[in-house]
Every structure is written in C-alpha cells, then in structure tokens.
Amino acid sequence: MPKSYMLPRPKKIILPKKLNETSALFYLQNENAMITVADNKQKIYRITQDGEVNDYFKEDFGPEEDYEDVVKVDSTVYVLISNGTIVEVKPNSDGLQVNKYPIWLQGKNDFETLYYDPESKGLIMLCKNCADERGKGVRTAYRFDLTGKQFETKPFYTISSKAVQNSLKDGKVDFEPSAAAIHPLEKRLYILASAGNLLVVANLKGQVEEAYRLNPTLYPQSEGIAFAPNGDMYITNEAKLGKPTLLFIPYKPAGK
Image (cartoon, rainbow, N blue to C red):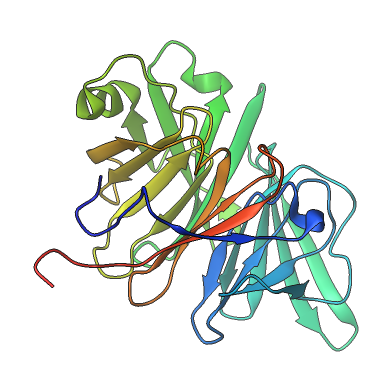
C-alpha cells in the first residue's frame, strides 16, 4: 500500500440514496467540502466531510446524460459526459449559463476521468476505453485548453497498461481509469480504476510509479477521488454492495 495511506482502514460514511450512482469527487479548498455528480442526475451536489449532501446549485444544469466526473476552476464547474463532452456550468444572475464542448475523436469512446492540471492550465481527460487505443496497450489523456475552450488535437500523454502490470507483479491487469486527482503535496497523479480495483500513482506525464490492488469489499466501485490541501484522501463508491459510501483516508507522511 502507499506509505502515507492506510488503504485497508478507511473511515466509511454512508451517503444518501440519491447518490447511488455517484461517479465523481472534487475538493473545494475554501469550503472544506466536495462536489459530486451522479449518472443521469441533472444536479451538482455538495458533500461535507461528514457526508451531509445538499444541492450545490438549486437549478438543474442539463438534461439526463451519463455524467462521469466534475471539476471546479475559479467560479466555473466542468462536468464530463462519458462520450467525451465537457459541460461548462457558470452561475450568473439568471441562474446557470451552460456550454458544451464535444471532443473531436471519432468512433466509440468512453471517458470517466476529468481532473485539473494547474501546470498546464487545462482540464485532462483520461480514456476508460477509446477507439484509437485498440491494440496499443495504452490509456490516452487529452487536454482541454481553458483559455481557448478547445481540445488539443494530439494526446497529452499515454499510460502503458504494461507498466501498471509490471508495477503490480501479480498477473493480468484491467486498467480502465474511473477517476483521478493530483496530490496537492506530492504533485503526483492518483488514478482509480474501478473495474480492476486498482489505485495507480503516476507522474504528471503518465509514467507509472506505483500500483496497488484495492480490497473490493471496501472499494467495490470507486469512481471518485479527491484530496484536501493537507493530503487527506477521499474516495466515493457507487452502491454496488448496497449503499453508496464516502471513504476518508488520512494522510500520514512517512517518518511523521
């Protein structure tokens, strides 16, 4: 397990039924709370550290879609649809201003992961399974430029599935990213892959540094990850084993 986290002993908080299909998590630094979205729900929800859930905006932000991740940059919220469309949600005096930005990729593509990279000043999307990856043994990251509001036409980086397998050293790997966040202190990328019950740690260019198996009883369908500024980790699970959960894993750096 990672040296700074006790993954086998998280604090578990039961979430309400409306978050049965919670698929995202983003930490709001100035509020000591998080936001999330759920598949086919038109709301953005706010979750406190003890699991209390409220509407973040009173209005719906769009029609029913397969919403998979959420990020807030400054006053704007960005929601990811599984087909690779980013939904921009900005509050104004009339309610919510909503814009959509579809990715240029052709073929069948499935995304569940969106995170903000302050170094590149962009949103990064990770393929769960994309048409262009077939037979290549990689997962591909694409960057959405927040200044020009458009996707770059070349991959931002790729992650080798073989590198994940080599790090685990315990057989076949099912690496389909379901969530990711940059650690605020380590400046490394933590990636969840729910289907294979994996946690992968990489540098910001996708080079795998560590990989771990997650206990499926504690992490049955982990599809959201976020960090508090002090490094504390939060993970959400869909209601695969009965009820959705918020897991809290405190950060304890080695030697402290």
